[in-house]
Length: 413
Image (cartoon, rainbow, N blue to C red; front, side, top):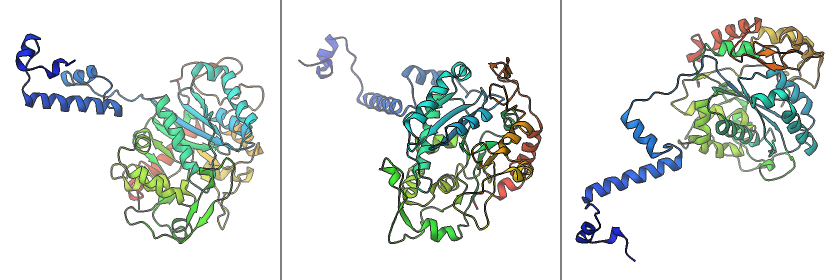
């Protein structure tokens, strides 16, 4: 049976179907293709919204006066309790949290983490803490940490639309100031500033990191193994410039979308390049942002951490102890790493810097949102911030790395 589209002009007239000029038919066909393609890409949600935008002017919603931070807190075997402690030290109802215990962690540990989150009255009420139930195997010398970070970014982009910065931390990190301090100071910053420590002066890393070719078994094995070395060595790339720096970053939502959705091919190209790169977490985001013209002028050259390296530097930094406390404070950094499990300096930070009692509380760091007895057992006004001395220190840091000539002088060089 023939449909109306195959009818002759006379038959179309009898069917009350209009005769269409070929050029209009082509125009409508292209328009329909545009709609279908855009819808598949998630760019045009509906025909109705498309026409609505043509008939009236719309503007993007104004950002909230108080930003929202999206945290990834990751750990491995034996890290359950200290990840839980770090989460409570970082918690604020405005923020979002993705928790990950990697595949090396026993199933019981990962199940216990899920159970704790599900049974927390605060987390149940606010619904801003997520556990990555499908654990990834993370080997820190290979690309799997980058893959895990991008995985958590994708989860946050899917779950929530209103966060402003993504910050990756480990269970061995700890804050040096309250979330009220951090949110208060970040409220005064442009929402397009990325915090990525970086340099193009590779030094010894050119020969020991960039030229060797490595294969990370973590990409295809279910248990951790050391990387494999392959040969011969490769030349340094000429299509893009390599940068290196800290694996710990604070990225804007816009830049995260650029890396995850990948409408430009650079993030994917560099992800493939860094698959065979030693310690790729120390170079991937640095190289992406400094080779992307749109974002290369948005970088504050700092990782927001206090980290103490041995001399000469080893694979991992020095574990922080009580003797390091004053240097931590003087750094004005909001975070520090790394700490041993339940080291006494963590109790000192809780009491002296975070205002958190280590006995008989709900475990959260007090803030303007806290209500109830014990302290912070109920959620009050989440927009009420009570910044303290930590905010003054963070302002000093931002004055140095963002609101100064150093911001532009230290970008991607």
